[in-house]
Image (tube, rainbow, N blue to C red; front, side, top):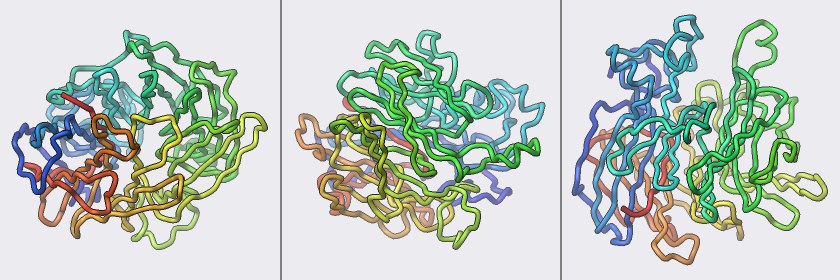
Length: 468
């Protein structure tokens, strides 16, 4: 694909691929554990056609890349997610949707599902045997076949999902409930909270009143509560006075963390005010006595008034990406909130053992953000959140890693008994691989490296689907 717009997220390690493959018996260096049985799949933006205007990394059509593990072997498959917008452009033979950096035009408003294309390109969640692809701007979940990653169609939960579905829902491993939120920055309601039960029925879809629309991205759950993050990243107030729209960060407005009982209603939300900040991704939350504790990756100032050393700072267009491990404690009895930074390392896209989601976790596996403008990860830190220890693994020279997922060992008792699985790309050699690490000792490096049959661009989020 041509890159005449010169944007870095269409070049190098982000250059889109054009083939859909299905390749078995891949070359393995080292040895894959026989017990590693399941599907590792990662979502990513991958434009099908040349973008018609400016391009932002978030704009690309969704493409999933999967590795199916079993009996010490691996099979690779990749597929575009065939959303309504994708199918419309495929029929026309060209891209017609603009991106988030382009102005909204009357023509864009008339496009199917427009003005922005719901690409389902951001995250994946595996619930009740269904694999759902999700969009960062809160869109329609698209159901994918765990067998071959083909698109099965929109998931509306029997027609009850009348709005959007956030990119980062949580599955409670105890109840098998799927907890999510929906948000909008264009029109009210600006926030809704939802629960899908263990039978796949949408049983709660509650409007939560918020004073202003903000860009929301993640949430967390505990055993009895959900935690909603209302953070002051939204429309620039001064531009709105001029009748214009531009994303801005309001340093005068506190962050708000909302604690709602799992099956509570809007009137039950307890809001706690914290220092202004932004969070892309949470690690987990848990209950400790009267407190609800949230651990996440926090960006202190995503749009600083004065930029410094921008070539050595990851960014997403105008938003700087300098997150740190952070903790908030909300006391439900006193109403008091305390907060603190836990580490100075710049890490994001954290993953945990999802079979223990909502409990107090000991371990988090955080990719290390490389000191460069285009976002990429140079390794992983395994945090011991109880004892404050950490270990680190750095990818080989010339490679960039993606988000890892935790694949638990069948029958495991220890929280970290399993494997970390991640894709990585070397833009210099135009090769990609899958690294499998022992989660108990990731600093030892890969126990197996799988050569992929094509270079794949760096992407967003991944998940592990256990078993066949």
